Length: 216
Image (cartoon, rainbow, N blue to C red; front, side, top):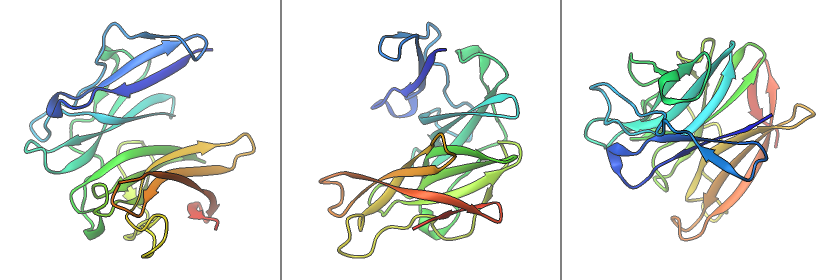
């Protein structure tokens, strides 16, 4: 009966963090008094946390965010888990290291913008690989427990467009939406001028042999 909003501070580098607010009507929000509710910790990262995504899976809440290495050059994904509540004290960070980091050539130095979707007993995570216009392209991974992830193939799930197309500079920053009829839509941003203009589009995503595919 409430709307929970997760948002980020920005512009402070390693000090950027995830905040939380709650609303009874979706219009007037009250900030969480414990804000910021999550920052990355540990020697393997810089402390930064942006691009929040929260998913319910196996009776727990999972918070996914992008952080960076201590030199703030490589962006990767971090996870935290809560059994109840969204305040600062509720989240327990997965401390073994990043759940996903750039390892494939097309991902270059960045994995960010997680978007989670549950299908049957698996959690799928769509994400942006490589920094904007490098070009960023969309990848996909899956997990049985929300913490240990397996990539779906070695190529982008949604690649950058061909030269001259609307998304020839980027296909990135995905957002997932499951409609009432079960249809999954994956929204994403793109452009063909290295970020001078920004466009939004979507793909209908289907399932075949328990894996997602782009229907078009």
